[in-house]
Amino acid sequence: MWDTFKSAHGNNEPKEAMSKSQARRKRRQNKKSLNLCFMARKEDDSSSVSSSNSSNSENYGQLLQAFQETHEEASRLAFLNNRFKEKNNWLENRVKTLEEELENSKTDFENLEII
Image 1 (spheres, rainbow, N blue to C red):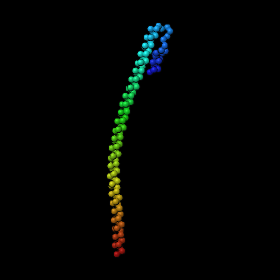
Image 2: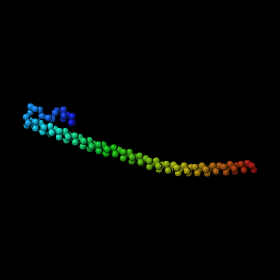
Image 3: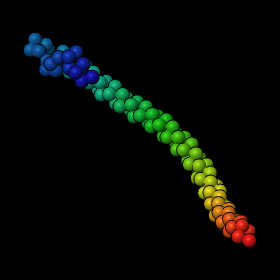
Image 4: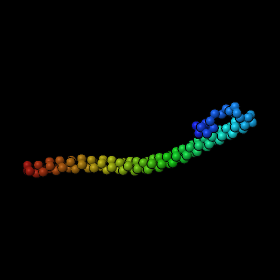
């Protein structure tokens, strides 16, 4: 914007051919233009901040939703994992019991054969 201002208004010093009143008018006009440029720049900055805040808010909302979904899934999987661990422990104990029964049955069978 500043480059646009400088190129549109050129040199700020009044030319020698201008009268003093014309030079004062020109300086006031340049000063007003410069103030408008600064005001426009300030509005651009504040709108980019508000749009950035809006964007951050949307990103935060998306991240929060993704986190909640992930947390729910992790909780569900932890519950299932605990159930499967319990089931696995029960099955391992059952296998041990059945192996012991099998060994006892083999021994009984061998004893029957000997007789």
